[in-house]
Image (cartoon, rainbow, N blue to C red):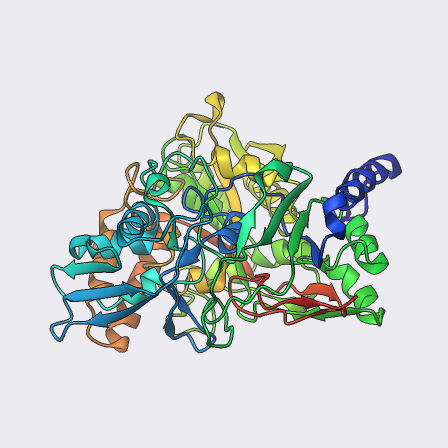
Amino acid sequence: MFQLMRPGRRSFASTLALSVVALSALASPVLAAGKTIAAVMHSDLRILDPIFTSAYISRDHGYMVFDTLIATDSNFKIQPQMADWKISDDKLTYTFTLRDGLKWHDGAPVTAEDCVASLKRWAAADGMGQQMMLFTASLEASDPKTITLKLKEPYALVLESIGKPSSRVAFMMPKRLAETPVDKQIPEQIGSGPFKFVQSEFQPGVKAIYVKNADYVPRTEPASWTAGGKVVKVDRVEWITMPDAQTALNALQSGDIDFMELPAIEMLPTIEADKGLKLEILNKFGFQTGARMNFLHPPFDNVKVRRAALLAINQKDVLDALIGNPKYYKACAAIFICDTPLATEVGGETLAKGGDMAAARKALAESGYDGTPVVLMAPGDVLTLKAQPIVVAQQLREAGFKVDLQATDWQTVVSRRASQKPPKEGGWNMFITNWVSADVVNPISNVAVGGQGRKGGWFGWAEDAKVEQLKDAFVRAATAEDQKKIAIEIQKEAYDQVLYMPLGQYQAPSAWRKSISGVIDGPATPVFWNIDKTE
């Protein structure tokens, strides 16, 4: 059954058609002008607003076009990027000063008003931003280059929130774009980042094109994760869509593309044996994959039904189908990531130990479940999201659920999961996603353990006053020991109410031709500054 999900199983005609479309995109006449990197990313790009969605392909696009006030380096330290900062002695006032020479892609200067509007839009959408704003008395532009953030009381995560490396990232935009309501996408791709987006060449499902921003002035420090000098050494970057992994690998080996973000695990020996290719894990901290239910509609509006589903889930089966090689995966029930300061497996014991199907059937029978189908969205175009829905659907069926597994692509999932409508009207009951581990290592960054409900909550819209109170206590905790105790209580509540179901952790190597150098590692990779190419 799982072989059906493996790459390279398409019909010959289908694969050939994909090859023609993808490689014709590479034949663009602009390709010959200067150095060009052609890359196959983990997903097709369709949503261009990195604040509208937390999808990583939109985050990756954001790093190409936009920039951040501050950023995180490889030592987990916050560093200046667009701005430097000072903190008052009473820890209540943060003053950010923009560096000289910052310009938007349309030539207009970057102003503090732009950045204030950008911060407010980001904070309305992001879990860490929302928490920070609860402590904020005012956020305003004191003058054209100065952003002043005043707090009601000290809050230790201000810099870590604004400078966090992954979704949602606090990208800066012109005020006219940043004033777009957070539930609508921005109408233009005008940033101040190291690349410019070529709207005229954008073909969703085929390619996305970026060219070097000649006006960008990088910082002088060495590049480190998302911090330091974003020095662009190529003229053009092309993201080419190739849904078939074997087609992409063939293109990498032939030199038609230069970089492949996500080769299939079974392809790694082939890549390792090719002397012209390099294989490396860029995100050393890896990923967590997990399932989210919709709390607004039956059957998962019933906590007893959610608990039955939790008992049915077996991480190992999911990980075997997704990765296959235990070298690259780990069963782990820690919501805040195994082997980190806040790790605990309390509440999730059955997940990592193989599930408890007998208990799941009994719990479902006693829950009042009436046979309402579970609409589970199943994207088929992202290698690391193909397996999980199929395995989870089978596990739920074995427990007694009716499951409507709806095949789609990931960008459809990203759009559809924002709908609060009932499943019969285009809504949904469950989807599965992957997190960069750095995004979910604490209760504030991990939006899946929120309880804000319909207004401000993450997709699924769980309402849980207790978990919100515990999160507030977490940010006020005086010591790391106190934070750990509260994080354990948050995880207990998350599992009791089944706010989220971790399905395990994994690592995913990337591959590129050895003509490429300067590839940066980090939790928000790949990025395309600092990379050079020799012919």
